[in-house]
Amino acid sequence: MIAASAAANPFIVDADQVFVLLRDWLVGFLPAALRPAAGAVLGVIAIVCVFPGLFALTTVFERKGLGRMQNRLGPNRVGPFGFFQPIADGIKSLTKEDIVPLRANAVVHFLAPLVLVATVFMGFAVLPMGRNMVLVDMDAGLLFFFAMGAATELSIFMAGWSSRNKYSLLGAMRAVAQMISYEVVLLLSSVSVVMISGSLSLSKIVAAQDQYSGVFPHWYIFTPWGLAGFLVFAIAATAETNRSPFDLPEGESELVAGYHIEYSGFKFALFFLGEYLAMFSISGLGTTLFLGGWSAPFSFLAWVPSWIWFFGKVMLFIFVFIWMRGTLPRLRQDQLMNFAWKFVLPFTLLNLVVTALWRFMGPGWSRWIVCSLILLAAYVVMGRLEMRSDHFGRRSYRYAE
Image 1 (cartoon, rainbow, N blue to C red):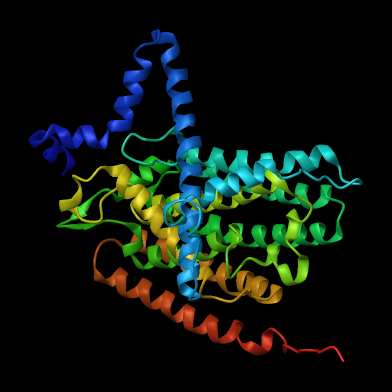
Image 2 (cartoon, rainbow, N blue to C red; image 1 turned 180 degrees about the horizontal axis):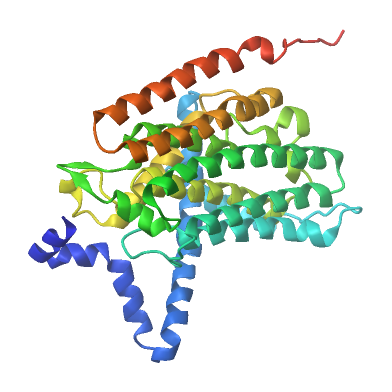
């Protein structure tokens, strides 16, 4: 479809590949031996500039959105409609005093936020953000992404342990427990995509979905196993990024602020940045695995630049995160862990079996019926047996006298 449109109108190809063409034009001034390295540097600069910029805009949209949900005004003082609020926050973070506890391990305390931000940025290197727009197109891109994601747990534990504060350590411990629990689900939900596409390359996974039956795409979310995999992926992604209702590591009523209690100034801002960058990163992975990546939702819209579709889908993920934060209450720790190990993980394992059935049953309505019935029955049975209220204990309240 894009090839036919390109033949009719070369402007479509230029708009789709504008950033690739710009990079090639810039490196064309250098000797041939330096061009690959220069192209990689330009790609890194683009990632380092674009996603923090999106982070700044997202903080404004989130505050305004939550304000609207709670019947109040969001930021509206700094700049037009409050859109310069991120600049004011950045200046405040840079100028605030950096306080390090006397008994803290100063080196580890300093490195923790840097490790968090650096590893999150590394994940963007393998995400295809448009046609021919991936910094490192490796065959094991999905494994690389999860390897970088696992390092964030190390940085969080570094922050909690190095602070020498019991609340920081408790926050770090339950953050790591939560992230490990749901990272297993996150990885296994991605295995079903690998089983169908036959590749760990994120570019090839997108290419496998860049097909159409009439006007409708072959996105994996439009299959029974794909829809189930996407839902458990979204649940695990919410827990991985410590977003509501899974924001227990930052339970203010219990742990003051979680693992970054003893951080102030720019170090705290780096943790804040890392959380939002992780949201962009995991949203980009979900878009790539289940929503066709940079491919268009309908064949007649394939003329729209591919990078617009990718970032549009990522921002849709982000607004759902914001919506959930303003809607759902925080879970208890026992509810969180029970939900992971007693419901989400077994359901994800069953989805792998369903994916294998889908793969080997061949085309036809029979596999749609069989796979859908298995998943629906499992959801009902497991929900009634494992998620009963008496499994979580009775909530009790005590008041000061």
